[in-house]
Image 1: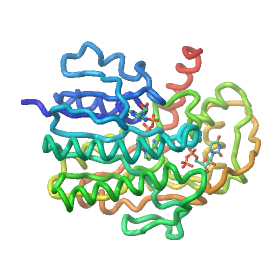
Image 2: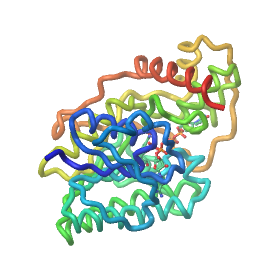
Image 3: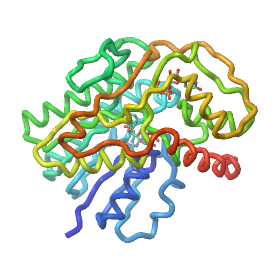
Image 4: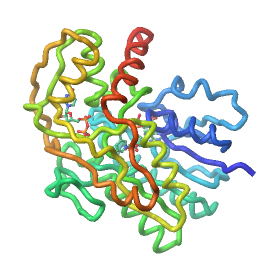
Length: 314
Ligand code: NAD
Ligand code: UDP
């Protein structure tokens, strides 16, 4: 019997790539999404595949489905989208996790949580290993997401200790690639869209803050390896340790697009982390995983996608 997977947030950026990969290996996939930041278009090519089902549902409401594995990805990930309705972001994280953990307990499914490098906040330890507890503001504009994800990790480990639920927790670092929305608002998509349209490239602050960018195919490989791993709950960092300043990213995007866009600065948003880079020794050791696609290869693939998306999106 093929494994039946539930992917919440399956019509989103990472979720839609994950659905594709699971189908490729012969699994069945139930994609659940409320289409807040996801789109049917991301999975429309999968509709009609007898192994694929699409359900419009909000994870804050309970649902009963017979599944073997649950990938809990439902949650807006871009700061502009998760700050649009912060209370809803907290509900999605907390009630979504409670509903998926309750479902996993009831049907004895293995359940994986898409946690984030944001749980490290503005890190005082660099680079960040899983053993670092983080430096997070509880009351700032990013807190709905950061604290939502932190309490979700807590819920996962309490369900594991209290109810023996088979959990997996991955901490995802900044990931980019095709199928991001043109209006996603995150830095890679913003810079590429601005460069392709010949608009100013908007650096927030002085651009000296750093991020480490992982191409989506590498990330999905890591997520699936983690779900397949036996006897390992995590948390495990999944990200590309290549670290770039935001100004370096802007310059690379201008170079690769051949754009005439000029760089302009804008105010730095509150609580914007100053640096971020994963330690991935644990993923290497336990999952045999490390990213294969550097920014210099992933960016051109993403630029190609956005070039087409801009021309075909109203
Ligand atoms: P995304 O916004 O493209 O995808 C999120 C998906 O969840 C969307 O399809 C959205 O419609 C859906 N969703 C949101 N709220 C929902 C709800 N209440 N009920 C049902 N569906 C809901 O973002 P993404 O980049 O694909 O991120 C996927 C997951 O990975 C998120 O949990 C995010 O926090 C996590 N993550 C992503 C990154 C990254 O860099 N992309 C980094 C760290 C963690
Ligand atoms: N950023 C920027 N210009 C933009 C969008 C983002 O300079 O148009 C910066 C942002 O301030 C942050 C970094 O790029 O320092 C990454 O932002 P993003 O929203 O992609 O993700 P974050 O890692 O902050 O959640």
